[in-house]
Length: 325
Image 1 (cartoon, rainbow, N blue to C red):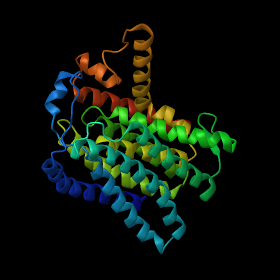
Image 2 (image 1 turned 90 degrees about the vertical axis):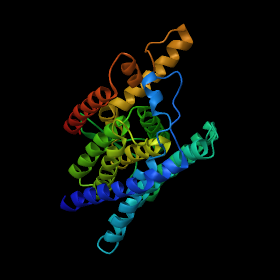
Image 3 (image 1 turned 90 degrees about the horizontal axis):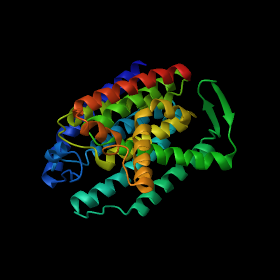
Image 4 (image 1 turned 60 degrees about the vertical axis):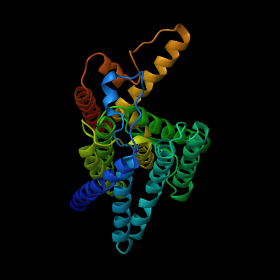
C-alpha cells in the first residue's frame, strides 16, 4: 500500500502542474462553456468558463500509468502489461469526448461529433475491451453477485452485450452527472476510491495501482473544478471517467456493485428517463428540470449544497457497497 500511496501523491502533483500549464492555454483558445438558455439562471454567469479540462485528468493518468508500467516492466512484466487494457479503454473514451469538445469549442461546430458517430465510437471501443477481457486476458464471464457473495457464470452470448451495456450506461450516467461545479469529479472520486479498496481486498494489484493514479488525478482536478469552477471537464473528462468506472468494475467482475455505489449517476439517468417519458405521455414534467441536480437547484439549493449532499450519499452507499462484496 505504501507504493500506491506514493503513486496517488505523484499523480496529484503531476496533475496540479498540468492544470497550471493547460488552464491558460484553454483560456487562450477561448474554449468556453456554452450554457443552456433554458437552464438555471445562476448558470449563465458560467458562460465562457474554460471547458475541455478533462484533458488535464487524462494526461495526468496517462503519464503516471506509463511511468508505473515502466517501473514494473523489469519487476513484474505480467502486472505491468495488465495496466494497459484499462488504460486503453479510458483513453479511447476520453479521445471521443475530446473530439466532440474540440469540434464544438475550438472549431465552433455547434453540433460537435454527430451522435451516431459518437455512439459508434463508444460501442467499438467497448466491444474491443470486452472481447480482450474475455479472450485476451481470459478473465472469463464470471460475475460477482453482491450480498450473496458468489460468482455466477454467464453464457458468453449474454455476457458480451451485458458488459457493453454496462460500459455505455455508466459512461452516459457520468456524463449526465457533470452539470454542477465539482459534482461529477467529487462523486466519481468516491466511487473510484471504493472500487480501488475492493481491488485491494481482492488483491487485484493492477487495479489498485491504476485506481490510485486516477484518484490522485481527479482530486487534483477538483481543485480547479470546485465552486466557483475555473475549468469544466467537458465530455473529454466525463466520458473518460465513465470508462474508468465501468472498466474497473468489469475487470473486477463486479459490474452489479455499480447499482449501489454509483447510486447518484444512476439516479441522474433515471430522472432524465422519467422526465422524457412523462412529458411524451402526459405533456407534464415530473421534475422542474432534469437531470435531478438541476431540479434541486431550481428548488433553491445552492450548488455547494447539491455537491455536498450528493457526495455524502455516494460515500454512504460506497460504505454499504464495501459491506456487501
